[in-house]
Image (cartoon, rainbow, N blue to C red; front, side, top):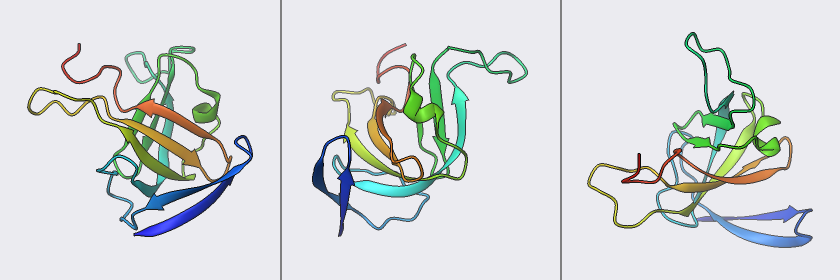
Length: 131
């Protein structure tokens, strides 16, 4: 396991983050582990038929490794990201007592290396067992 040292200006402190050197096709599988990937697309949460974005419907972002994060609100840190940006995704939490096969509700903290900004969002609009 590699350790990566980051200085987050907003925190004014150094944080040591354990990072598994995983391929960009993997998602972190244990809480506190991180992987590097790239932004595939930055979207709105909702799109009209035909794919036209619905303004102010929330932020959504997808990643080359298959990851996805979404919010009902506009998240400036997500909205300022661009396709191709290198990011680090860290698994922050996993819901408990999920029905078999329902993997929704994992929460990731993602840091964009181009912007230096981070956000924490789930991978679905609903937790496991929800709507």
